[in-house]
View (cartoon, rainbow, N blue to C red):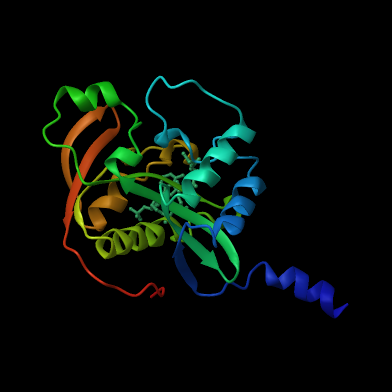
Length: 211
Ligand SMILES: CC(C)(COP(=O)(O)OP(=O)(O)OC[C@H]1O[C@@H](n2cnc3c(N)ncnc32)[C@H](O)[C@@H]1OP(=O)(O)O)[C@@H](O)C(=O)NCCC(=O)NCCS
């Protein structure tokens, strides 16, 4: 009986959030979160922004293997958010060459000046844990990690659906509000609801404990 109650209430008891970089030691937690959500979009495995636009598409098993290999080689970055031992979300970022495939790339390239040092391309949060601030926390931790890795110009491509009801799947690149709250400035619009936002980050050594 006690264990039944414990099992029921454990769903509502959350540890303070922490974050760790996506890396070989955190791969199992990342993979577990992706598998819990059927590969994300039926098998994306957070690979699409790593691919060159127009690159041949593969299936879920191939994307899983590709992502694992990129992680092993240190060529796939993310701030992975943990509640205790469980990964509950992430913010994907990386040097621009690591993430060539942004959305609205044609419009982006039409008015392109200099490429940024870093891109922030995608967020994902466990569907049971949304609207708790996990994506906002993941963004802060990604920025800490970028600063730790040397800083520089950071670009992101969030959506602005202010005042409209929208499926959370459309918000995988984050919301304009999230980035403005984190100090990003609007640079230009590249689609009806999509902005390029920019922030310059100095290099900094920081800790990774939540709040
Ligand atoms: C979008 C997503 C990352 C948001 O995560 P979250 O932890 O619920 O977000 P937070 O609670 O930190 O809120 C972040 C901001 O987004 C806003 N937001 C979150 N969900 C929203 C929704 N469905 N509609 C409008 N705004 C939303 C919040 O109001 C908050 O705004 P604020 O910072 O201006 O206050 C999450 O819903 C998700 O994972 N969606 C699926 C994304 C996906 O499919 N990714 C696949 C990889 S491409």
